[in-house]
Length: 383
Image (cartoon, rainbow, N blue to C red; front, side):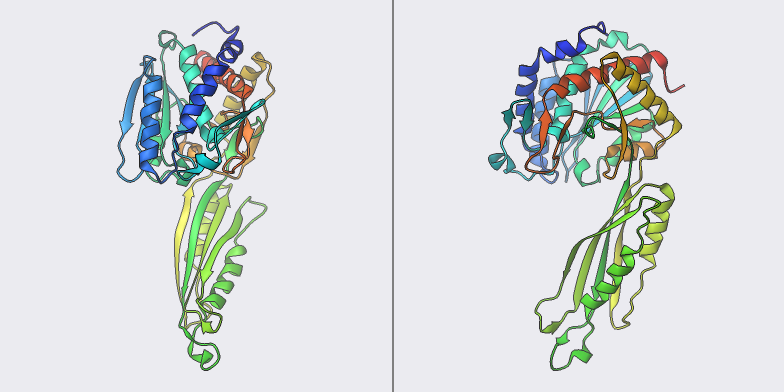
């Protein structure tokens, strides 16, 4: 590795290059359900990173974008970095939400979540000499479908995490804070099938699916548990055709967040046991807690303390936070890996038209990442 002194300044001196590269990546739109866009982005990332002595693997997908894996070094021990290729912004968003530099900020779709992390890794690979990694190798995994729960990428996250000493997730920081725990997430759908009838002539012959769904919604809302950190959000309802027709169908889609592992089983059983109040109706319930909670462990605390020491070396103050949103870090933690999340850049308004990045945080967070890597190798926190 290069000498400690001047890491932050070295990256700052390349600010123009950083912005140009970020612009290139942001303007290649990569909506989760647009494989062509994601694969175009993958191709460009591979091309940009080809200047470094890294091995590249590409995991082909038919429905979603391909996943890519970069490896620097050949050591038996592995430090895993996680980013993703997809964004929540549909193709064409860049027309009305262009890449713009405004003072100390940059705006654009996916600029903070999560394309700024590519610039961090670009500089990190430039800073690190593979000959100085010793028994370690650095692996950077970019999944293509994180924003929709990683239906195809999860298995790659889990397999890499299982053989990693530590996992460093490059999701954006929470106002500078690291994320040492995250809630798990679930999605449940309640469908009610009733019987239609004329609301004025023969309502007694019908079975009102909306009324039944209302009962189910109230019941499902009671599954929340503030003490345990479990929340229920009735996010979407559909049903009915005309005001004067007894509706024969209604549906609700529900978001669930859990902080404790025990809550996963409790919530899933609660939904499985739902039953109708009106015997003339029929109920179908589907869904699950698809992202397990990322729980802070003693090993995570050790890694967080190491990160605080690394931050102190470059004049930063670090704090930690628990967040309600999930990431691929949840999957890594679920297989027993030591995970530290929120190591990406600082910005805000993710997933909105006002999403922004603070430019100086590219150098700041890359310097922090560099120090964490160096100190992890020196201290071998896994032992």
